[in-house]
Every structure is written in C-alpha cells, then in structure tokens.
Amino acid sequence: MNSRGCLLAAFAIFTFSAVASTALARPSGFFGQECAYCHTGGFLDGRATPDAVLDVFSAQQSTIPPGQFGDPDRGEGPLPTYTAAPGGTFNMTLNIKDTTLYAEPFTPDRWALGLKRIYTTDPDYQNGNADKMTWQNDQLTLVGSRVQGDPTSNPSPIPADQTGWTRQTDTSFMEGGGVPEIDAHIDEQYYTSGDTYGHEWIGPTSLQATVTVPAGVQAGWYDVEISAEGLDTDFLAFYDEQHFYLHVAVPTNPGDVNCDGLRDGRDIQAFVVALLNPAGFPTIYPGCNIQNADVNQDTVINIADAPALVTRLLVP
Image (cartoon, rainbow, N blue to C red; front, side, top):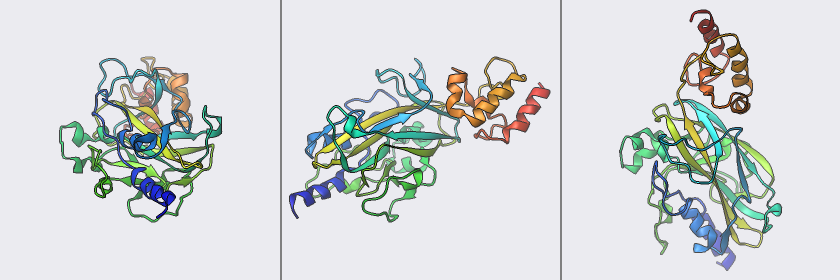
C-alpha cells in the first residue's frame, strides 16, 4: 500500500474515537483526547484548527451557575446552551463554516463530525455504575440515527439531519497492530457522521439534529462536545472542537410561561412564543424556564399543552 493508502487506512481507524475525560467535573488534560491526538500531530501530520470548521448555534448563551450539578464553566465565557426536560428533546443546530476564511485557509477533503462526552447524561452512570457496557443504554440519543453496520456510501454525503449519523458503542478497533489503546472509555456511546470514510467537503452549510434526553437524567448542566476532524486536500490532518451546555430542567411552575409569578392572559403570548419560536424564547423571556410551557407535563411542548394552559388559567 502506498503512503497515501496507509494514511487513509489510519484515518479510517483513528477518525472516530471517543473522548476520555472526568465525568461531571472539570476535565483534566484536553478535550477530544483521542481524535485530537491523532489529528494534531500525535500520529498524523496535522494541527488544531479551532473555530475553523464548526459552530454550534443556540439562541441562548450561558455559563453554568455556581453550585449547580454538572461540569463547571470551562472558563471560556458563555457557551451555546440548549434546555430540555428529562424525557424531552432539543433541536441542535450545527453550522459548517467556510474554511478558506480561517487564519490558515484550507479545504477539507475527507472529514466527519462527532457528538461525544455524552456518557455523563446516562442515569445508570450518574448512579455510580462503573460498568461501561451499560452506558449505551440510556444516554443522549440522536432520533432516527443509523445503527452500527448500516451501509453507507464512500464517502457519504453530508447529512441534512440526524439520519446520516451513526451511533457508535465500541472503539476497540483501535487495539492491535501495534496501535496503543488510549481510550479509557472503550465502550462509551457516541455518534459520528460519515461512518468510516467521512464526507466529501461541502460547505458552508447548516445541519439540524433532534436529540432526546433520557427520562432518568438528573436535572443539572452537562458539557457536551461536538468535533470536526479529517484530512485536507494537502493531506494534512485537522481537528476542530466546540462545546455546548445542555441544561436539563424540570418545569418549575407549569402554566406560568412568562415567569412573572402569575398565571394570566400574558402567559398565552409567552406560550405562543415557546410553541412557534423556541429558539427565540430565551431572548424574549431571559432567565425563564421554557419548560413551564409543558403545561400537561408530557415532556414535550406542543399544541396539546394549549387545553391544559386554558385549564390552569381558568382554574387556579
């Protein structure tokens, strides 16, 4: 096999590995340890490209409040934040950038995305079960994603939504052949777009994914990682990594949708915003828990909450 073929094989092996870090505490070392290691010069000839490829979009930007359960603020200032109730969903938006505008312009050739560090949201893990094989059972889930083994083209097109992502539950393929096993979370669940051979470059574009939060997740704050890694047209590896906060919150006062301490006609307008413009809700009602619009408490905000809201308004 020629050198390019060898590197392609190595790329296939190393691109999709999970993240080793300390759960629910400020992680030691650097995030994205395994992918970053290979794609920033540890194995491949590459470099970190922060903010070059990926942007996580949310209308809400937050820091983790002091004393809250979860990973403390990483010292980078406010991060994009999504809010969902246990058993609910949130819609994640990823913007793929124009890499020719980066400080060191480059054009990706083969690349992929990863959704990682999600094992902290597993209720079984939160309750102290150290058996990694159970972590995959009840973590953040990309609704409609493929399972391992589903066929995909080589390279695959960039997915418009989560149906082009694959749920990964085992990184043991890194073992053997003289390759050291550096992943402490060998059976961690994570997701990748592009499967083994990644995507051909198309950018900039916007990707949407619907994420389910397990019903048993403790209320609190979670630091979730999105990475973009691959090879550029000069066959140099690159690695970009972004984080967002997931705020798992239960409704604090169902029906008080505008969070003014009352249930009255003004909550109807706030409910309409929560229903039709959830991304804009934090801006219009800063500090207000959008889950108060889940009036019937079925973990989703939809038109089925309207009759329950009317009942709350008419019968205090």
